[in-house]
Image (cartoon, rainbow, N blue to C red; front, side):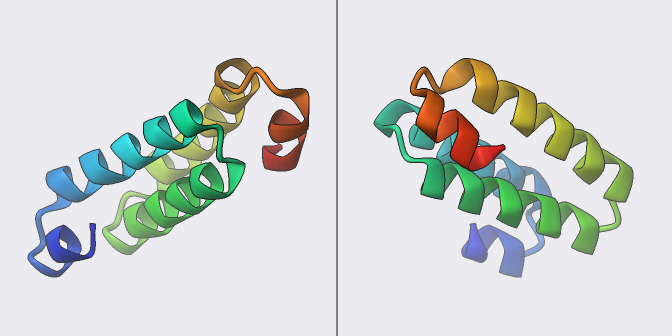
Length: 78
């Protein structure tokens, strides 16, 4: 992500953080999910996409409720 960010490759940076969020779900890590989502939202705001960042925030909260089967992990994220 950092390499793409430094080289202003926005699409690739976004994809990397999306993939990290999916990986977090796969391995059952709410910490990684939170960190990936937080980084992605901050990055989107930094690159002038605040409305999309707010939408991502809402989407990530909803996805956490369905993608994480463990209720404790769901509760930690939301």
